[in-house]
Image (cartoon, rainbow, N blue to C red):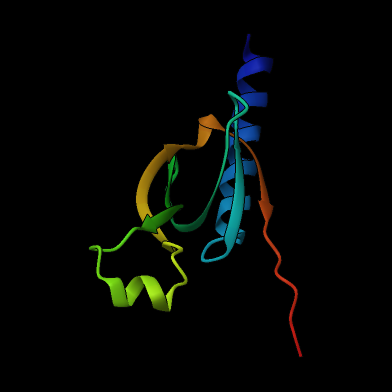
Length: 103
C-alpha cells in the first residue's frame, strides 16, 4: 500500500511541476475520465490548478439588417475564457498547443 501511495505522490508532483512549467501557455488538458479541453494555466497550488478554459461563443446579433449584410448573414464567432478549478489528481496529461507563425 505504501508503494502505491508513493507512486501517487510522485505522479502528483510530476503533474504539479508540469503545470508550473506550462503556466500562462495555451495547453490541451486530458482528464482521467478521458475528456479533453483547452485552456491557459493561471495558478498552480499543491492540490489544484486554476485554468482559464476556452469556449466558443456564437453571436447571432440583435437582428440588425446592417450587421447581417456586413457579415453576409453569418453569425459572429469569438472565444472567451472562464476560470475553473481542477484537482491535480484529476489530470492525466498536458500538451502545449502550438500555433504556426505566418510571415
